[in-house]
Length: 80
Image (cartoon, rainbow, N blue to C red; front, side, top):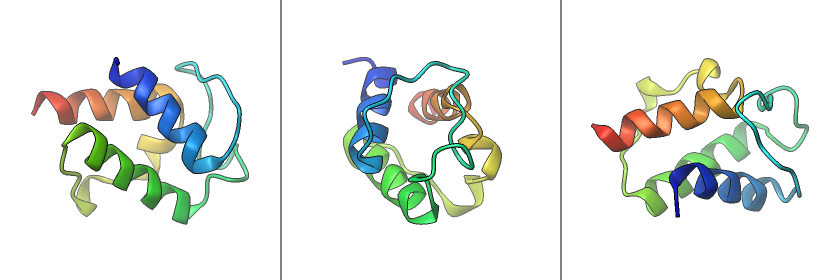
């Protein structure tokens, strides 16, 4: 499964919403369910399911601005 689809599935599961995501879909601040606890849960799921390590100093609000930003971040982490 491409990581973009996996990322969308993780977001739907953690946020318990039924939503389609495009690169322009706003996340943090736009989806009420997407709070600080959800951010931690999403990061944990990404680490577990993709086998990547995300350090605290890499996390910023910009990453969670929209689905495309988060997807780009995950792509860079997988390539590292």
